[in-house]
Image (cartoon, rainbow, N blue to C red; front, side, top):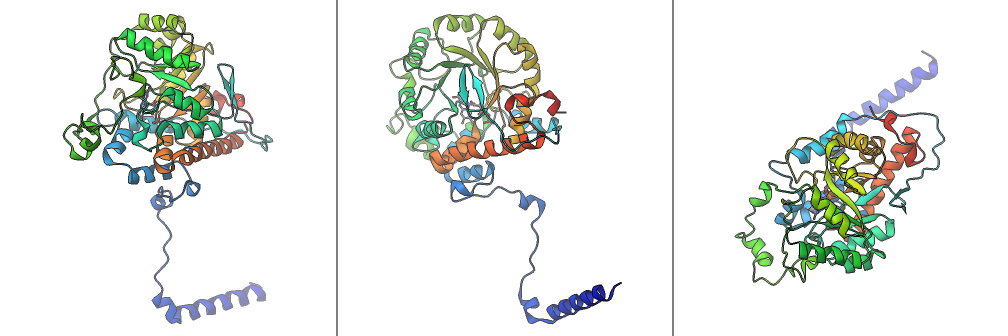
Length: 399
Ligand SMILES: Cc1cc2nc3c(=O)[nH]c(=O)nc-3n(C[C@H](O)[C@H](O)[C@H](O)COP(=O)(O)O)c2cc1C
C-alpha cells in the first residue's frame, strides 16, 4: 500500500469512528433503501406532469372514481383470466437489439388508409366516458387533436359523434355495435357517415360475456348507483347515438359473415372488424372485402380464452399477408409492448384503459400525457434496437 492510500484509509476510519460516537447517530432513524417492489410501485401523482409512466394515472383513477365506475373500467370477463393474459403475453416475446446505428433522429410516424399520423397509437373505443370525467369523450378528442392521433368513438359514447368531431377538429373513426333492428342500425351508420367519419369499426367479439365483477355491484339495487342509474333519476341523458332509434343497447349475437357483407355494401366508410383473433377469421375478413382488422379480445372483457392478443397477432398477420392494415389492442402499457406488436407485423396499436386512467385523473391533459409517455418509451426502445423508422422494426427484433 502506498503512503497516500494508507493515510486516506486511516482518515476515513477516524471519520467513521467520529460518526459512530456522535449523538446524532443515535437520534437519526436509519435511512433504508427501498425494496424492489417499492422502487417500481406506481404513485398517485397530483399533476399529470409528475407521471413517470402510465401506471401512475391508474393509481389516481382508482382513488377519484366511484367504485362502480372504476369496476366497469377495470374488470375483465369471468375472473379476469384474459385480462391478465393480455399483460402476461408480452413476456413471451423478448427483444433482439441491434447496435451501432445512428439513432439521433427517430421517426414515429405511420399511415393508415392514406392518412398520416405522428404516432403508431390509436385511441380504442370505450363507452360512457362521462362516467370517468365530466368532459368525457370531448376531452379525449381534444387530446387526440393536440397529439394528432386517431380516436375511435364507441356507439355507446356519452357524447354525440357530432360534438366529438367538433372537439377533434375532424371526423373520428366510429365503432359500431349492431342490433337486430336493421332500421335503427342503418340510422346510426348513416349518422356517422353524414358526420364525415371515414372508418367504421364493427365490433365482433361480444356475442355474449360474463361480467362477474360488475354483477357484484348490483347496480339495480345499490343505493350509490341508483342515485344516477334509477330509471326516474333523470341524471343520465341516455346514449346520444341511439337517439331517434328504437335501440337502447348493443345486441350482437345474431351477426354472421353475410351480415358483414351487408354492412360492407351499405356503407361508404372503410369497414374494419374489431375483435378478430384467429388466422381463419382474418382470411375470411379479407375474402369478404373488409378493409382492416383490429386484433382484440375487448381488453379481456369478451371471452376467458387465456390467450393474449399479442400471441394472436402473428397468425393474423400471416393470414392477412399485408393486404389490409392490422391494428392490435389489449394490455398495451409500455413502449416495449408497442415495439413488440410492430415487430410482429402490426401496423399500429390501440390503447384503452391507459387513456381512461389519464382522463379520470386529469381530463384532457391526462390523456395527452399518457400518449406522450408511451411515445417517449417507444422512442427509447427504437433507439435501443437501432430502428430509426417504424418500417425498420421487423420480426428479427423479437425472439
Ligand atoms: C371501460 C371500457 C369500455 C369499453 N367499451 C367498448 C366499446 O364501447 N366498444 C368496443 O368495441 N370496445 C370497448 N372496449 C374495449 C376497447 O375498445 C379495447 O379493445 C380495450 O380496452 C383494449 O385493451 P386495454 O384496455 O387493455 O388497452 C371497452 C374497454 C373498456 C376498458
